[in-house]
Picture (cartoon, rainbow, N blue to C red):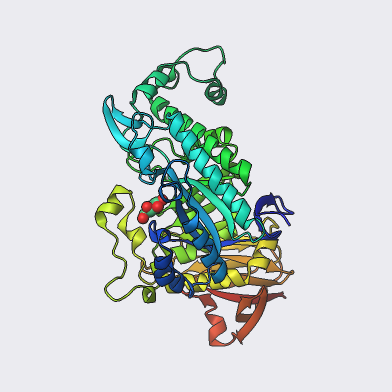
Length: 520
Ligand code: DGJ
Protein backbone atom coordinates (compact mmCIF):
# COMPACT_ATOMS: atom_id res chain seq x y z
CA UNK A 1 0.00 0.00 0.00
CA UNK A 2 1.27 3.45 -0.89
CA UNK A 3 1.46 6.38 1.49
CA UNK A 4 -1.01 9.27 0.89
CA UNK A 5 -0.35 10.79 -2.51
CA UNK A 6 -1.81 13.07 -5.12
CA UNK A 7 -2.31 11.54 -8.55
CA UNK A 8 -4.64 12.17 -11.49
CA UNK A 9 -7.93 10.24 -11.55
CA UNK A 10 -9.10 8.64 -14.80
CA UNK A 11 -10.19 12.04 -16.13
CA UNK A 12 -6.85 13.62 -15.25
CA UNK A 13 -8.13 15.49 -12.17
CA UNK A 14 -5.58 15.69 -9.31
CA UNK A 15 -6.95 13.51 -6.55
CA UNK A 16 -5.76 12.72 -3.06
CA UNK A 17 -5.48 8.97 -2.45
CA UNK A 18 -5.33 7.67 1.11
CA UNK A 19 -4.78 3.95 1.45
CA UNK A 20 -5.16 3.89 -2.33
CA UNK A 21 -8.74 5.22 -2.16
CA UNK A 22 -9.83 8.69 -3.35
CA UNK A 23 -10.24 10.91 -0.30
CA UNK A 24 -12.09 14.24 0.06
CA UNK A 25 -10.86 16.27 2.99
CA UNK A 26 -13.93 17.37 4.96
CA UNK A 27 -11.81 19.21 7.43
CA UNK A 28 -11.63 21.76 10.18
CA UNK A 29 -8.61 23.69 11.42
CA UNK A 30 -8.31 24.04 15.17
CA UNK A 31 -7.21 27.24 16.92
CA UNK A 32 -3.49 27.97 17.00
CA UNK A 33 -2.83 27.00 20.62
CA UNK A 34 -5.18 24.02 21.07
CA UNK A 35 -2.72 21.26 20.17
CA UNK A 36 -0.07 22.59 22.58
CA UNK A 37 -1.86 20.66 25.36
CA UNK A 38 -3.07 17.04 25.02
CA UNK A 39 -5.27 17.59 28.09
CA UNK A 40 -6.90 20.63 26.49
CA UNK A 41 -7.49 18.60 23.34
CA UNK A 42 -9.17 15.87 25.40
CA UNK A 43 -11.32 18.27 27.34
CA UNK A 44 -12.29 20.89 24.77
CA UNK A 45 -11.50 19.81 21.24
CA UNK A 46 -12.26 16.14 20.64
CA UNK A 47 -15.64 16.22 22.44
CA UNK A 48 -16.66 19.22 20.35
CA UNK A 49 -15.59 17.58 17.11
CA UNK A 50 -17.51 14.36 17.74
CA UNK A 51 -20.77 15.90 16.60
CA UNK A 52 -19.33 17.15 13.31
CA UNK A 53 -18.99 14.58 10.54
CA UNK A 54 -15.55 15.77 9.52
CA UNK A 55 -12.89 13.28 8.55
CA UNK A 56 -9.76 15.44 8.97
CA UNK A 57 -8.46 17.76 11.66
CA UNK A 58 -5.87 20.37 10.74
CA UNK A 59 -3.58 21.03 13.67
CA UNK A 60 -0.28 22.82 14.30
CA UNK A 61 3.01 21.25 15.37
CA UNK A 62 5.30 23.86 16.92
CA UNK A 63 9.04 24.07 16.34
CA UNK A 64 9.48 25.68 19.78
CA UNK A 65 8.14 22.58 21.55
CA UNK A 66 9.60 20.05 19.11
CA UNK A 67 13.18 21.26 19.49
CA UNK A 68 13.23 23.24 22.74
CA UNK A 69 17.02 22.97 22.88
CA UNK A 70 19.16 22.90 19.80
CA UNK A 71 19.54 19.30 18.67
CA UNK A 72 17.19 17.88 21.37
CA UNK A 73 13.89 16.73 19.97
CA UNK A 74 10.73 16.03 21.89
CA UNK A 75 8.02 14.29 19.89
CA UNK A 76 5.66 13.67 22.78
CA UNK A 77 3.09 16.35 21.84
CA UNK A 78 3.00 15.11 18.29
CA UNK A 79 2.68 11.48 19.40
CA UNK A 80 -0.27 12.33 21.67
CA UNK A 81 -1.97 14.18 18.86
CA UNK A 82 -1.57 11.22 16.52
CA UNK A 83 -2.82 8.71 19.03
CA UNK A 84 -5.82 10.87 19.98
CA UNK A 85 -6.72 11.39 16.33
CA UNK A 86 -6.35 7.67 15.63
CA UNK A 87 -8.67 6.84 18.53
CA UNK A 88 -11.22 9.38 17.22
CA UNK A 89 -11.04 7.95 13.71
CA UNK A 90 -9.84 11.26 12.23
CA UNK A 91 -7.08 11.95 9.76
CA UNK A 92 -4.65 14.80 10.45
CA UNK A 93 -3.05 17.51 8.38
CA UNK A 94 -0.18 18.92 10.39
CA UNK A 95 0.87 22.54 10.11
CA UNK A 96 4.59 23.08 10.55
CA UNK A 97 4.73 26.26 12.60
CA UNK A 98 8.45 26.74 12.02
CA UNK A 99 10.37 29.90 11.19
CA UNK A 100 7.32 31.79 9.91
CA UNK A 101 3.74 32.03 11.06
CA UNK A 102 1.63 34.91 9.69
CA UNK A 103 4.66 36.90 8.63
CA UNK A 104 6.41 36.61 11.99
CA UNK A 105 8.73 34.18 13.77
CA UNK A 106 6.73 33.63 16.92
CA UNK A 107 7.08 29.82 16.91
CA UNK A 108 10.86 29.71 16.46
CA UNK A 109 12.53 28.16 19.54
CA UNK A 110 14.10 30.50 22.06
CA UNK A 111 17.64 29.43 21.05
CA UNK A 112 16.88 30.98 17.64
CA UNK A 113 15.20 34.09 19.05
CA UNK A 114 17.96 34.71 21.58
CA UNK A 115 20.76 34.61 19.04
CA UNK A 116 19.99 37.51 16.66
CA UNK A 117 23.64 37.71 15.66
CA UNK A 118 23.54 34.32 14.03
CA UNK A 119 19.81 34.12 13.26
CA UNK A 120 19.38 37.68 12.08
CA UNK A 121 16.05 39.47 11.75
CA UNK A 122 14.53 41.07 8.68
CA UNK A 123 14.58 44.88 9.04
CA UNK A 124 11.82 47.40 8.34
CA UNK A 125 14.51 49.92 7.42
CA UNK A 126 18.30 49.86 7.88
CA UNK A 127 19.06 49.27 11.60
CA UNK A 128 15.37 48.80 12.45
CA UNK A 129 14.93 45.07 13.04
CA UNK A 130 11.59 43.29 13.11
CA UNK A 131 10.76 40.18 15.12
CA UNK A 132 10.81 38.09 11.93
CA UNK A 133 13.84 36.01 11.03
CA UNK A 134 15.09 37.12 7.63
CA UNK A 135 14.43 34.76 4.70
CA UNK A 136 18.07 35.41 3.75
CA UNK A 137 19.36 33.94 7.00
CA UNK A 138 20.78 30.65 5.73
CA UNK A 139 21.71 29.40 9.22
CA UNK A 140 18.10 29.77 10.41
CA UNK A 141 16.77 28.11 7.27
CA UNK A 142 19.16 25.22 7.73
CA UNK A 143 18.09 24.86 11.37
CA UNK A 144 14.41 24.86 10.37
CA UNK A 145 15.07 22.39 7.52
CA UNK A 146 16.89 20.11 9.94
CA UNK A 147 14.00 20.20 12.45
CA UNK A 148 11.42 19.72 9.71
CA UNK A 149 13.35 16.73 8.38
CA UNK A 150 13.42 15.19 11.87
CA UNK A 151 9.69 15.79 12.20
CA UNK A 152 8.96 14.09 8.86
CA UNK A 153 11.33 11.21 9.67
CA UNK A 154 9.45 10.70 12.93
CA UNK A 155 6.18 10.57 11.00
CA UNK A 156 7.67 7.98 8.66
CA UNK A 157 8.81 5.88 11.61
CA UNK A 158 5.51 6.05 13.49
CA UNK A 159 2.77 6.56 10.90
CA UNK A 160 3.82 4.98 7.61
CA UNK A 161 1.43 2.06 8.06
CA UNK A 162 -1.47 3.83 9.76
CA UNK A 163 -1.48 6.99 7.62
CA UNK A 164 -3.21 9.13 10.24
CA UNK A 165 -1.32 12.09 8.80
CA UNK A 166 -2.28 12.64 5.18
CA UNK A 167 -0.59 15.96 4.41
CA UNK A 168 1.74 18.53 5.95
CA UNK A 169 1.76 22.29 5.53
CA UNK A 170 5.16 23.96 5.46
CA UNK A 171 5.16 27.12 7.62
CA UNK A 172 2.01 29.25 7.86
CA UNK A 173 1.20 32.32 5.76
CA UNK A 174 4.87 33.06 5.09
CA UNK A 175 6.12 36.47 4.12
CA UNK A 176 7.31 39.64 5.80
CA UNK A 177 4.78 41.97 7.43
CA UNK A 178 5.27 45.66 7.88
CA UNK A 179 7.61 46.64 5.03
CA UNK A 180 7.91 46.10 1.29
CA UNK A 181 11.20 44.34 1.70
CA UNK A 182 13.83 43.27 4.16
CA UNK A 183 16.43 46.04 4.83
CA UNK A 184 18.86 43.91 6.83
CA UNK A 185 22.46 44.39 5.74
CA UNK A 186 22.53 40.99 4.02
CA UNK A 187 19.28 41.71 2.18
CA UNK A 188 20.49 45.17 1.07
CA UNK A 189 23.64 43.62 -0.37
CA UNK A 190 21.65 40.94 -2.22
CA UNK A 191 19.15 43.53 -3.51
CA UNK A 192 21.98 45.53 -5.08
CA UNK A 193 23.69 42.45 -6.57
CA UNK A 194 22.96 40.93 -9.99
CA UNK A 195 19.61 39.12 -10.10
CA UNK A 196 20.19 35.33 -9.77
CA UNK A 197 19.91 33.22 -12.97
CA UNK A 198 16.75 31.28 -11.96
CA UNK A 199 14.91 34.57 -11.45
CA UNK A 200 16.13 35.92 -14.78
CA UNK A 201 14.99 32.73 -16.46
CA UNK A 202 11.53 33.10 -14.92
CA UNK A 203 11.30 36.72 -16.08
CA UNK A 204 12.64 35.96 -19.59
CA UNK A 205 15.76 38.08 -19.06
CA UNK A 206 19.06 37.19 -20.75
CA UNK A 207 21.33 35.20 -18.43
CA UNK A 208 24.29 37.52 -19.29
CA UNK A 209 22.41 40.53 -17.90
CA UNK A 210 24.18 41.75 -14.73
CA UNK A 211 21.57 44.21 -13.47
CA UNK A 212 20.35 44.15 -9.91
CA UNK A 213 16.71 43.94 -8.79
CA UNK A 214 15.48 47.52 -9.08
CA UNK A 215 16.84 48.31 -12.55
CA UNK A 216 15.25 45.11 -13.85
CA UNK A 217 11.91 45.03 -12.06
CA UNK A 218 11.28 48.66 -11.03
CA UNK A 219 8.33 49.01 -8.62
CA UNK A 220 7.79 45.23 -8.54
CA UNK A 221 11.39 44.67 -7.45
CA UNK A 222 10.91 44.64 -3.64
CA UNK A 223 8.11 42.07 -3.70
CA UNK A 224 9.78 39.89 -6.33
CA UNK A 225 12.98 39.97 -4.32
CA UNK A 226 11.17 38.84 -1.16
CA UNK A 227 9.17 36.20 -3.03
CA UNK A 228 12.36 34.82 -4.53
CA UNK A 229 14.02 34.49 -1.12
CA UNK A 230 10.99 32.99 0.63
CA UNK A 231 10.70 30.50 -2.24
CA UNK A 232 14.35 29.44 -1.89
CA UNK A 233 13.99 29.08 1.88
CA UNK A 234 10.78 27.08 1.73
CA UNK A 235 12.09 24.85 -1.05
CA UNK A 236 15.07 24.02 1.14
CA UNK A 237 12.85 23.22 4.14
CA UNK A 238 10.21 21.31 2.12
CA UNK A 239 12.85 19.31 0.26
CA UNK A 240 14.56 18.27 3.49
CA UNK A 241 11.23 16.98 4.86
CA UNK A 242 10.07 15.34 1.68
CA UNK A 243 13.33 13.43 1.35
CA UNK A 244 12.56 11.78 4.69
CA UNK A 245 8.89 11.07 4.06
CA UNK A 246 7.25 12.11 0.77
CA UNK A 247 3.77 13.08 1.98
CA UNK A 248 1.83 15.71 0.01
CA UNK A 249 2.98 19.16 1.11
CA UNK A 250 1.22 22.50 0.82
CA UNK A 251 1.99 26.14 1.52
CA UNK A 252 -0.84 28.49 2.52
CA UNK A 253 -1.37 32.12 1.61
CA UNK A 254 -2.53 35.27 3.38
CA UNK A 255 -4.21 36.74 0.32
CA UNK A 256 -3.29 39.97 -1.36
CA UNK A 257 -6.05 42.46 -0.55
CA UNK A 258 -6.81 46.13 -0.16
CA UNK A 259 -4.66 48.22 0.14
CA UNK A 260 -2.58 45.84 -2.01
CA UNK A 261 0.70 47.21 -0.72
CA UNK A 262 3.27 44.47 -0.11
CA UNK A 263 3.93 44.42 3.60
CA UNK A 264 0.31 45.18 4.49
CA UNK A 265 -0.04 41.46 3.75
CA UNK A 266 3.04 39.24 4.26
CA UNK A 267 5.35 40.23 1.43
CA UNK A 268 6.89 37.27 -0.39
CA UNK A 269 4.10 34.75 0.31
CA UNK A 270 2.31 32.71 -2.39
CA UNK A 271 -0.18 35.38 -3.48
CA UNK A 272 -2.09 34.64 -6.67
CA UNK A 273 -0.04 36.78 -9.04
CA UNK A 274 3.22 35.03 -8.10
CA UNK A 275 1.92 31.47 -8.03
CA UNK A 276 3.86 30.61 -11.19
CA UNK A 277 7.11 31.79 -9.58
CA UNK A 278 6.37 29.66 -6.52
CA UNK A 279 5.61 26.65 -8.74
CA UNK A 280 8.93 27.09 -10.52
CA UNK A 281 11.13 27.67 -7.50
CA UNK A 282 9.46 25.39 -4.96
CA UNK A 283 9.02 22.04 -6.75
CA UNK A 284 8.82 20.08 -3.48
CA UNK A 285 5.45 21.68 -2.72
CA UNK A 286 2.38 19.99 -4.22
CA UNK A 287 -0.04 22.88 -3.92
CA UNK A 288 -0.47 26.52 -2.97
CA UNK A 289 -3.49 26.97 -0.76
CA UNK A 290 -5.57 30.08 -0.12
CA UNK A 291 -6.89 30.97 3.33
CA UNK A 292 -10.26 32.32 2.27
CA UNK A 293 -11.65 34.99 4.58
CA UNK A 294 -12.54 37.35 1.71
CA UNK A 295 -16.10 37.36 0.39
CA UNK A 296 -15.17 36.73 -3.26
CA UNK A 297 -15.03 32.97 -2.87
CA UNK A 298 -15.26 32.31 -6.60
CA UNK A 299 -12.52 34.79 -7.49
CA UNK A 300 -10.11 33.27 -4.99
CA UNK A 301 -10.89 29.69 -6.04
CA UNK A 302 -10.53 30.59 -9.74
CA UNK A 303 -7.07 31.98 -9.02
CA UNK A 304 -5.87 29.10 -6.84
CA UNK A 305 -7.12 26.36 -9.17
CA UNK A 306 -5.47 27.90 -12.24
CA UNK A 307 -2.52 26.24 -13.95
CA UNK A 308 -3.34 22.80 -12.55
CA UNK A 309 -2.85 23.82 -8.90
CA UNK A 310 -5.00 21.42 -6.86
CA UNK A 311 -7.37 23.50 -4.73
CA UNK A 312 -7.18 22.87 -1.01
CA UNK A 313 -8.64 25.44 1.37
CA UNK A 314 -7.02 24.95 4.78
CA UNK A 315 -8.78 27.97 6.31
CA UNK A 316 -12.28 29.03 5.28
CA UNK A 317 -14.57 31.70 6.75
CA UNK A 318 -16.51 30.86 9.88
CA UNK A 319 -19.85 32.45 8.94
CA UNK A 320 -22.74 30.34 7.56
CA UNK A 321 -21.82 30.92 3.90
CA UNK A 322 -19.05 28.40 4.49
CA UNK A 323 -21.72 25.65 4.63
CA UNK A 324 -22.77 26.45 1.03
CA UNK A 325 -19.33 27.40 -0.38
CA UNK A 326 -18.12 23.89 0.43
CA UNK A 327 -20.41 22.43 -2.27
CA UNK A 328 -19.03 24.79 -4.89
CA UNK A 329 -15.43 24.04 -3.92
CA UNK A 330 -15.90 20.31 -4.45
CA UNK A 331 -18.33 20.53 -7.40
CA UNK A 332 -16.69 23.27 -9.45
CA UNK A 333 -12.99 23.05 -8.62
CA UNK A 334 -12.68 19.38 -7.67
CA UNK A 335 -11.13 20.62 -4.45
CA UNK A 336 -9.01 18.17 -2.49
CA UNK A 337 -10.35 19.61 0.71
CA UNK A 338 -12.14 22.33 2.61
CA UNK A 339 -11.71 23.39 6.20
CA UNK A 340 -13.23 26.27 8.20
CA UNK A 341 -10.96 27.84 10.79
CA UNK A 342 -11.50 27.43 14.55
CA UNK A 343 -13.60 24.32 14.07
CA UNK A 344 -13.75 23.32 17.73
CA UNK A 345 -16.04 26.18 18.70
CA UNK A 346 -18.30 26.12 15.65
CA UNK A 347 -21.11 24.33 17.43
CA UNK A 348 -22.58 26.39 20.28
CA UNK A 349 -22.73 23.30 22.51
CA UNK A 350 -18.94 23.13 22.28
CA UNK A 351 -18.45 26.24 24.37
CA UNK A 352 -19.09 26.50 28.08
CA UNK A 353 -21.62 29.22 28.98
CA UNK A 354 -20.05 32.63 28.68
CA UNK A 355 -17.28 31.21 26.56
CA UNK A 356 -18.83 31.61 23.12
CA UNK A 357 -16.17 32.67 20.66
CA UNK A 358 -15.77 36.41 20.66
CA UNK A 359 -13.13 37.32 18.12
CA UNK A 360 -10.95 40.15 19.25
CA UNK A 361 -11.36 43.12 16.89
CA UNK A 362 -7.70 44.09 17.26
CA UNK A 363 -6.47 40.60 16.31
CA UNK A 364 -8.81 40.48 13.34
CA UNK A 365 -7.66 43.91 12.16
CA UNK A 366 -4.02 42.87 12.45
CA UNK A 367 -4.74 39.77 10.38
CA UNK A 368 -6.79 41.77 7.84
CA UNK A 369 -9.83 39.59 8.53
CA UNK A 370 -13.24 41.18 8.33
CA UNK A 371 -15.26 40.51 11.51
CA UNK A 372 -18.10 39.15 9.34
CA UNK A 373 -15.87 36.23 8.35
CA UNK A 374 -15.65 35.22 12.00
CA UNK A 375 -19.31 35.44 13.05
CA UNK A 376 -19.97 31.75 13.40
CA UNK A 377 -23.45 31.89 14.93
CA UNK A 378 -25.41 29.06 13.36
CA UNK A 379 -22.59 27.87 11.12
CA UNK A 380 -21.97 24.63 13.02
CA UNK A 381 -25.48 23.27 12.44
CA UNK A 382 -25.46 24.17 8.75
CA UNK A 383 -21.96 22.77 8.30
CA UNK A 384 -22.88 19.60 10.14
CA UNK A 385 -25.54 18.90 7.49
CA UNK A 386 -23.35 19.87 4.53
CA UNK A 387 -20.55 17.58 5.71
CA UNK A 388 -23.01 14.77 6.43
CA UNK A 389 -24.24 14.94 2.85
CA UNK A 390 -20.79 15.22 1.32
CA UNK A 391 -19.34 12.40 3.37
CA UNK A 392 -22.27 10.17 2.39
CA UNK A 393 -21.74 10.84 -1.29
CA UNK A 394 -17.93 10.95 -1.45
CA UNK A 395 -17.77 7.91 -3.75
CA UNK A 396 -20.27 9.32 -6.25
CA UNK A 397 -18.60 12.70 -6.15
CA UNK A 398 -15.05 11.47 -6.62
CA UNK A 399 -16.17 9.18 -9.44
CA UNK A 400 -17.65 12.16 -11.32
CA UNK A 401 -14.77 14.62 -10.93
CA UNK A 402 -13.92 15.53 -14.51
CA UNK A 403 -16.56 13.25 -16.07
CA UNK A 404 -18.59 16.15 -17.51
CA UNK A 405 -21.65 14.95 -15.59
CA UNK A 406 -21.05 17.12 -12.53
CA UNK A 407 -22.41 20.68 -12.71
CA UNK A 408 -21.84 23.20 -9.91
CA UNK A 409 -23.45 26.56 -9.20
CA UNK A 410 -22.95 29.49 -6.84
CA UNK A 411 -24.82 32.75 -6.40
CA UNK A 412 -22.27 35.45 -7.10
CA UNK A 413 -24.03 38.48 -5.62
CA UNK A 414 -27.49 39.75 -4.76
CA UNK A 415 -28.20 40.65 -8.41
CA UNK A 416 -27.58 37.08 -9.51
CA UNK A 417 -31.06 35.53 -9.77
CA UNK A 418 -30.22 31.99 -10.79
CA UNK A 419 -28.78 29.75 -13.46
CA UNK A 420 -29.98 27.45 -16.22
CA UNK A 421 -27.95 24.24 -16.34
CA UNK A 422 -27.88 22.94 -19.87
CA UNK A 423 -27.90 19.13 -19.77
CA UNK A 424 -28.03 16.73 -22.72
CA UNK A 425 -31.82 16.09 -22.65
CA UNK A 426 -33.25 18.84 -20.50
CA UNK A 427 -32.43 22.21 -19.05
CA UNK A 428 -32.69 22.72 -15.31
CA UNK A 429 -33.57 26.19 -14.08
CA UNK A 430 -32.36 27.00 -10.59
CA UNK A 431 -33.72 30.13 -8.95
CA UNK A 432 -31.69 31.33 -6.02
CA UNK A 433 -33.50 31.84 -2.71
CA UNK A 434 -32.38 32.96 0.74
CA UNK A 435 -29.99 35.86 0.62
CA UNK A 436 -29.63 36.55 4.35
CA UNK A 437 -26.12 37.07 5.70
CA UNK A 438 -26.83 34.93 8.75
CA UNK A 439 -27.57 31.91 6.54
CA UNK A 440 -25.72 29.87 3.91
CA UNK A 441 -25.75 31.27 0.39
CA UNK A 442 -27.07 29.62 -2.76
CA UNK A 443 -24.69 26.96 -4.02
CA UNK A 444 -24.58 23.29 -4.84
CA UNK A 445 -24.04 20.79 -7.59
CA UNK A 446 -26.00 18.40 -9.78
CA UNK A 447 -24.83 14.97 -10.88
CA UNK A 448 -26.38 13.28 -13.92
CA UNK A 449 -27.53 9.77 -13.10
CA UNK A 450 -28.24 8.13 -16.45
CA UNK A 451 -30.10 9.98 -19.23
CA UNK A 452 -33.14 11.16 -17.32
CA UNK A 453 -32.20 11.03 -13.63
CA UNK A 454 -30.35 13.62 -11.49
CA UNK A 455 -29.10 14.11 -7.96
CA UNK A 456 -28.95 17.69 -6.78
CA UNK A 457 -27.53 18.96 -3.52
CA UNK A 458 -26.64 22.24 -1.86
CA UNK A 459 -28.51 25.16 -0.26
CA UNK A 460 -31.06 27.80 -1.15
CA UNK A 461 -32.48 27.20 -4.62
CA UNK A 462 -35.72 26.25 -6.38
CA UNK A 463 -35.75 23.76 -9.27
CA UNK A 464 -37.73 23.73 -12.48
CA UNK A 465 -37.16 21.57 -15.52
CA UNK A 466 -37.36 23.22 -18.93
CA UNK A 467 -37.43 21.90 -22.49
CA UNK A 468 -34.13 22.42 -24.19
CA UNK A 469 -34.01 25.53 -26.35
CA UNK A 470 -35.23 24.76 -29.88
CA UNK A 471 -36.43 21.26 -28.93
CA UNK A 472 -39.79 19.98 -30.26
CA UNK A 473 -40.27 17.98 -27.07
CA UNK A 474 -41.64 19.24 -23.80
CA UNK A 475 -40.26 18.05 -20.51
CA UNK A 476 -42.01 17.08 -17.33
CA UNK A 477 -40.89 16.23 -13.82
CA UNK A 478 -41.65 12.53 -13.55
CA UNK A 479 -40.53 11.88 -10.01
CA UNK A 480 -39.02 13.92 -7.20
CA UNK A 481 -37.65 12.39 -4.01
CA UNK A 482 -35.88 13.71 -1.01
CA UNK A 483 -33.29 11.52 0.66
CA UNK A 484 -29.82 11.22 2.04
CA UNK A 485 -26.69 9.41 0.98
CA UNK A 486 -25.19 6.90 3.33
CA UNK A 487 -22.18 4.90 2.29
CA UNK A 488 -22.58 6.27 -1.23
CA UNK A 489 -26.11 4.86 -1.53
CA UNK A 490 -29.09 7.13 -1.94
CA UNK A 491 -31.70 6.29 0.69
CA UNK A 492 -34.94 7.87 -0.46
CA UNK A 493 -37.28 9.61 1.96
CA UNK A 494 -40.57 11.19 0.94
CA UNK A 495 -41.73 11.21 -2.65
CA UNK A 496 -42.52 14.86 -3.23
CA UNK A 497 -45.66 15.39 -5.26
CA UNK A 498 -48.64 17.70 -5.16
CA UNK A 499 -47.89 20.92 -3.26
CA UNK A 500 -44.35 19.77 -2.45
CA UNK A 501 -43.56 19.07 -6.08
CA UNK A 502 -44.75 22.56 -7.05
CA UNK A 503 -42.17 24.08 -4.77
CA UNK A 504 -39.32 21.71 -5.51
CA UNK A 505 -36.54 23.38 -3.57
CA UNK A 506 -33.84 23.15 -0.95
CA UNK A 507 -33.66 25.80 1.79
CA UNK A 508 -30.77 27.13 3.88
CA UNK A 509 -30.14 23.73 5.48
CA UNK A 510 -28.43 21.63 2.80
CA UNK A 511 -30.38 18.76 1.35
CA UNK A 512 -30.32 16.17 -1.44
CA UNK A 513 -33.03 15.60 -4.03
CA UNK A 514 -33.23 13.02 -6.76
CA UNK A 515 -35.45 13.73 -9.73
CA UNK A 516 -36.35 12.16 -13.05
CA UNK A 517 -37.76 13.80 -16.11
CA UNK A 518 -39.63 12.55 -19.16
CA UNK A 519 -39.93 14.07 -22.59
CA UNK A 520 -43.28 14.16 -24.39
C1 DGJ B 1 -4.84 33.04 9.57
C2 DGJ B 1 -3.78 32.18 10.21
O1 DGJ B 1 -3.18 31.36 9.24
C3 DGJ B 1 -4.35 31.35 11.34
O2 DGJ B 1 -3.31 30.64 11.97
C4 DGJ B 1 -5.07 32.24 12.31
O3 DGJ B 1 -4.18 33.16 12.84
C5 DGJ B 1 -6.20 32.94 11.56
N1 DGJ B 1 -5.65 33.72 10.50
C6 DGJ B 1 -7.03 33.89 12.41
O4 DGJ B 1 -7.36 33.47 13.64
